[in-house]
Length: 243
Image (tube, rainbow, N blue to C red; front, side, top):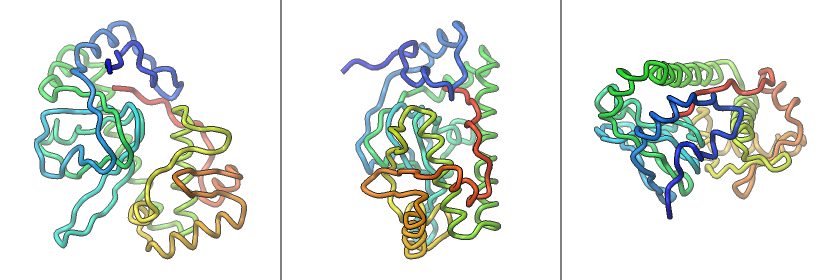
């Protein structure tokens, strides 16, 4: 099956992503070396590894996590189409967390060694990498704020709104439903909750007619009310660069 070229990339059709200039598009065509298709459950990047490749998620979803010394896994956040992964290894020499495919995924592949060519020849694209890193830091800050200041219902409402808005912005919404193939345990880990508490809270949100998550699909019944519960404003996701 032939790969998708940068000029025909379906992600570029979504308003979430900042358009390429002709020069940036031409460079990205040389930066991309191919595509990788991985099966559900496959580890894409391993904590401590020195990966020679960087990736943009073209299709599918994944999970970022750290493994503790006792072997337990802590979910950090989730990976969606358009996300750039492997930057830590590219800049720090090794990954500080792992990335696992939650669904079958298709990834655009880039050589890590070409990262320095990008910085040297296309500073605008290098700035985009800085922006991506800053967004990751902002998201972690928002997560910490949720852990410290939101109760269980507010945390889960916050996560569901953010995930729903992101997937809707990349064309994955049908009516009021988006695909969501993570486990409840993954969401519980990411939000610092027990599985039992997470399950009870999701049932409560369903009973209130706000949201329902089952069989790999998330349906948001009352988005504004769910955002109010989460103590966040409903805003269109900020436009972001696409690597």
